[in-house]
Length: 403
Ligand code: PMT
Image (cartoon, rainbow, N blue to C red; front, side, top):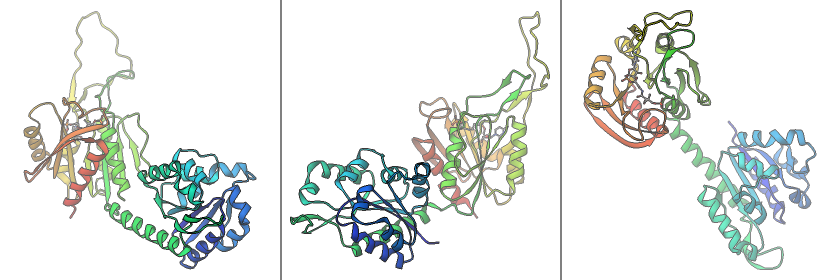
C-alpha cells in the first residue's frame, strides 16, 4: 500500500523548494496531502502544490469552516509521516507550547505518526535562545528535526538557518518511514493470533435489587486486551459489569453472572489461541434468585443459601487442545503454594498470582505486582508495574507457549 506523507508548509521564502520535495516524493510513489498556512500562500499559490502532489491542498483561509473541524483529524489519521517544511520560528514555538489555532497546528496536535520538522529562518532567529529551547523541548518529546544548513540566506546574511536541500529532506522522510515500518512489524508480533480475555467481576443476583459481587474494576483484563490488540491480535473481551470504556479494536461481550461468562467463553474457546482469565468470578451464587424483592422477616438472622458456580477455567482445562491457558490467582497468603495447586487442578500453562492484600497490587488501582508461575515450575516476580505493562509481560510469556 502507498505510504501517505502529509506536508505542512509555513510562510518563508523556502516554500518554493517544497514543490521540488513533493515532486521527488511523488516520483518515489508516495501519496501526499499539503496543508498551507495563510502566510505560505503569500509565497506560492496552493494550485502549484495541488498540481505537483496530485491531491487537494488544505489552506488556512477559513473558507470551509464546516470541513475544517474534521479535516485535521482525518488527515492526521491518514498520515504515515508528517513533514513541516519550511518550518518558521512561529510554528515551532506554537507546537512547543501546544497552541493549535489553525489547520496546520491542530493537525500536528492530532498526529500520532512521526512528525519531522525542517526549520528555515534567518540565522539570528534560528540561534535565538527561545527558538533553540523550543527545538530542544520538541526533540525531547520525540519530534524529529532536519537541521538547517549554513549558507547565504535570502536576507543576505550568511550563517545557519537555510532549509536543508530537497534531496536531504526526501532521504530523511524515506529513512523515517522505513524505521517506523520496522518498528510496526516488531510491535505486531501477535498478528494472526486470536486472544480471549476475561475481565471484571461477576454479579450473582439475590433478587431484582440485590446481588453478590466483588471489587474487580476490570482494569487488569482491559489492559491485557488493549495490549494484545495493539500488538496485532484479534481480541474478544468477555467482561462483567465495569465502568471503563471498551478498548479500541477489541470486541467486547458483556455478561453478568458466572454462568453467563461460562457460556460466552465456551462459545469462543475453539476460536482462541490463548485464553487469559483475569476476571474475578464468583465461586458461589444464591441457590434461589427471587423474582420479587426479598422481604424482611420478624427474625434477627437470615440465611442465604449458596451453591457452587461452574469453574470456567477448570472446564476449559479439561477440553483444551492447542490453546494456551492462563489463569489469575487472587490470594492474600501462601500465594505461590495456592497458585501451584490451581495450575495442576485447572491444567494451566501458567498463572499470574497477585497478592490482593499488597499495596499497589490487585483490585481497582492502575498498578499490579505479580508472580508468574509456570507449569514447569519457573517463577518470575514482576515487581510493581502498570497493569498495561503486566499485560505485555503476560503476552510475552503467552507467545513462548504458542505451538
Ligand atoms: O479488575 P481489577 O480491579 O483490575 O483487579 C484485577 C484482579 C485482582 C481481579 C485480577 O488481577 C485477578 O486476580 N483476577 C482473578 C481473580 C480470581 O477470581 O481469582 P481466583 O483465585 O478466585 O480464581 C482463579 C482463576 O480461576 C481466575 O483466573 C478466575 O478467572 C478463574 N475462575 C474462578 C472461579 C470460577 N468459578 N471460574 C473461573 O474461571
